[in-house]
Image (cartoon, rainbow, N blue to C red; front, side, top):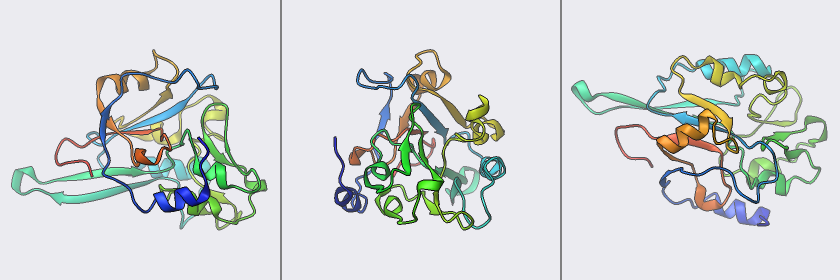
Length: 221
């Protein structure tokens, strides 16, 4: 499916309600790469400590004033003993059909052999087409390098060392699960088979790979 810049700029402004789905299968016969890396964020386990954000910043030398990963707090909700908060994760979702890759004029935006969407900084000219095209609004211009940056699943740091992303290792409640969707025995596949999950803005056809286990109280919007 070829995605035009105009299609995504228009589609990002008119998104339907997020569907809640159950994942029972993995991968695709058309999937070319040996690995297809993804994340599950469990809203029922997140306590809003932001250890993930701090670990991400330290591992990837993210400058002050910008962030690859944000935890959004909603609440308090409910009353009395039922008072609670909801937490959501905002970061790159590593689309299988990534609009940023389609619109980049220099080839700086890539999707590698493991399915990780990344930015090659020395190819980025700062045109910000990818920022405009991204319907998830998770990209920014690095104030130091002046190149566009975002979550790359620690591709150039932790993954290069054979480790999980910093956010996964830092989470005290194990709210973040990382793994290969093409491996039927991986932890992430087992979680997706066992739990109800949803993905943001699936109607746009981006095929995002950040799955979320919805909070047990209240509806997913």
